[in-house]
Length: 163
Picture 1 (cartoon, rainbow, N blue to C red):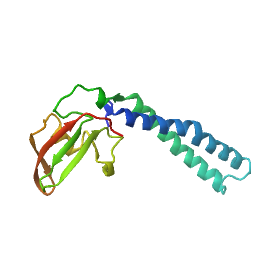
Picture 2 (picture 1 turned 45 degrees about the horizontal axis):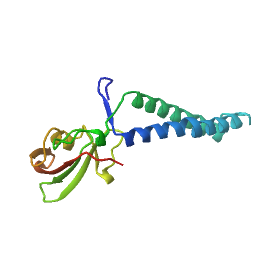
Picture 3 (picture 1 turned 30 degrees about the vertical axis):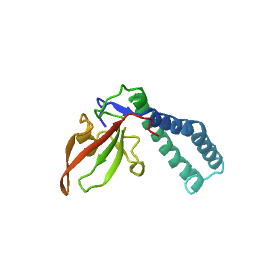
Picture 4 (picture 1 turned 90 degrees about the vertical axis):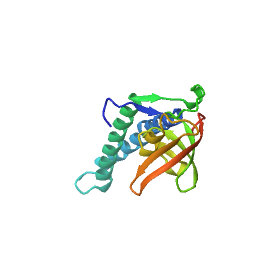
């Protein structure tokens, strides 16, 4: 993701990133540092599995800490409950759809760090979300898929808390 692109995120998603960062910095990293120091005190490091694994895990943790820090710095928190009521679809909307095959589906438009297909959370930059953005309740939108064009009817638009 380029540095110009805003990292839109819901309050729940922001808190999840913050919680993960806190856990890594205050719990997991100090434990790994302790293991590495203990393993290093055992002598030969070239064949010391605890030392080698610990150093590798510490690099992974440090990389994740840097990533999370940058994502949080770039975050633009959008609270769906604080939006004025509208039937137009924007970031953080919960949208009821009638898919082209007759299935009803509800999707929640969230940030790229919050995607969860099991909970129907889709990224605001996904093809489906892009086709929905700025449309209104009652509209039909066209989604181009590998299988062809799909006409999707928008049944409802809500701005409610996204867990």
